[in-house]
Length: 474
Ligand code: QV4
Image (cartoon, rainbow, N blue to C red; front, side, top):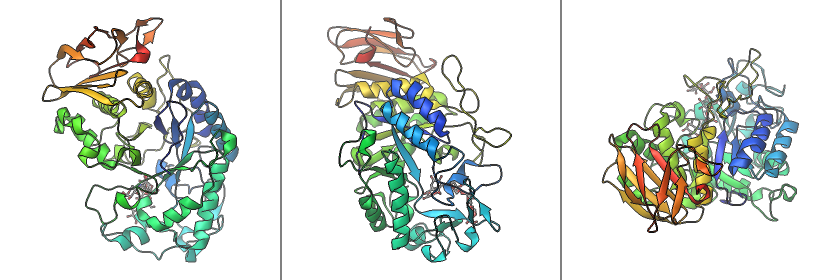
């Protein structure tokens, strides 16, 4: 279940974190489809507990499998999936199979109005009772398999996936989403569940819905959240054959490199050469909704120049199943998504350049990022060739004769003739501008009959990347 079922030559997923279903439907039609995005990871769809101040993470505390949240209800969800599929954009749902909500004083009321008593492990909306859960205990030793898989992750009531009843309810929930036309799932906290139980659940799922354009016998795409920094008792290897696995080492290492802790020349062996999973098993990202909130090596939108360089490298280098993060602005771990006085999530608004303005960051609408989604589509299936570096933080490489990328993360200019591997002609740099009405609004590069062109990226240029490809040839 490693096939994401992308349409045409598309190959990038965007996580529209906390967006409403009606906004995603419009985004598919107005932006993602036309720009060649392959799919959207959406926030959890099932009913969750309501926490004071409405932090984003309340959605990781399920109350039932009714499809009503602050992002919308089942009808709106179904409408979004259909409209996105209609324009060739797949939907992947973040699903919580590991647990229900954490403790709550007395009776909780969820986002669909269902009552639950998490303290008693009573979730009548499913229904689950205490016998469907593992006994309560805390994870204190992350290298103790029993604790990691049978105790409670931050106090969240831990379901027993070896039980027939729990399995049947989880399968029913996932099959319901498949019926509605989704292409697959991000499995939250997969590391906290035994791989045998997950294997049973995944293999019991229905095929994807042919009424939504999936070929007969298509299996749901699965990508599992397993954080494995290496040398861990519960490792990514136990899950990688069941579906793709989030490759957190990719995120940490790309952050390190573009923060200048590791010379970019070493990226020549990027991928399995760095100890990452095989390409087809690795879900890759510069940052995700959790680690963008942690201080450390991981880059996020708050360091835009480095972030755009790292993203360009991510999307240009042929490794992994790529996911781009689309965030809302945050100050701390608990900052809620943009919301109104009634605590309803608000819709993104755009300025004349299409950038988001009202608390949504929308990295996927930054030209330097969506242009690289187009680059990745244009160079699909081409090998990496012609690697060049200056022995330090200036690099360039080709994707066959279809695309060329150069990066300058040194504090001095990159100015020289480089092999672009492209056919002779003039190409627009899709980072500093676009090809509009036959001319470039940003930099352009003239490639001679030998494939060489003069490349200039000043150390104080707005962006440290230059990208050329055959779909942006003048
Ligand atoms: C608090 C205490 C606990 C205590 C508990 C007891 O901190 O020590 O045991 O009370 O009552 C929120 C609060 C957290 C609180 C918890 C339970 O932040 O302080 O515990 O609720 O009330 C998200 C957030 C969490 C949030 C959780 C549930 O990140 O902060 O917890 O949602 O709302 C490991 C895992 C990995 C996990 C990662 C964060 O291996 O699987 O930690 N990542 C996924 C998601 C992540 C999500 C969860 C798992 C849980 O990506 O977003 O956590 O579904 O690495």
